[in-house]
Image 1 (cartoon, rainbow, N blue to C red):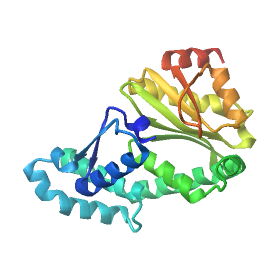
Image 2 (image 1 turned 135 degrees about the vertical axis):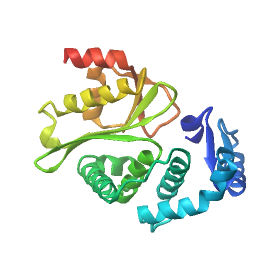
Image 3 (image 1 turned 60 degrees about the horizontal axis):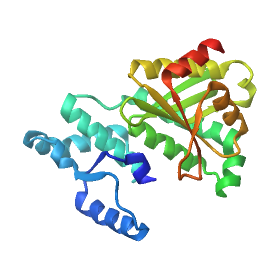
Image 4 (image 1 turned 30 degrees about the vertical axis):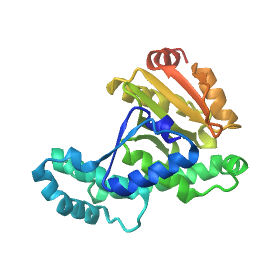
Length: 251
């Protein structure tokens, strides 16, 4: 999975010596060779930025109210610290943090409603907390949520993240059963398309849980082509952004 997600990329860590050792052990046990390179986050910093790193990181942690040691939290802190040092970008304000946290809670709740039984059948146990952590990790890595609210609650969302150059991936698309025949999916995908075009995307990939017939039919209707992968946990699809635009115009 790591090789598939990170092929040809450089992954930066603030604990290079430890992470390099554990990564080597992991790949040795699996009998594989990493398709990506692990490097020290320090190589991204100038001397002046390195001197300000620890104070800036502490400030970001305090502003984000990070209390639990989780991979998604740690990645978000490192990302925002680097952005603040490089570009003067600020972390989310209190209102922004509260909005994102509430949206993640809503997404996990909708997933439990529509995917809980399916995920339980595939993987044994559905955990709303784990699902929320997956979504938070995607956002920490540059992902984007496109959401629609109706009657003051989440009616549907698309979770995207950038992948290869000029390519994005749909990690999750979910619509409340009440709104599946209302054209909500078209509105969500039209907004998704606008986001892809504005970011220069040429291709769009998507993942669907096996057995999720609603999502499978939607992908087939929109012209997504199935991809053959070694991943048995998800069905993989691919479409050109231009083809998706044409399909949405015809829908």
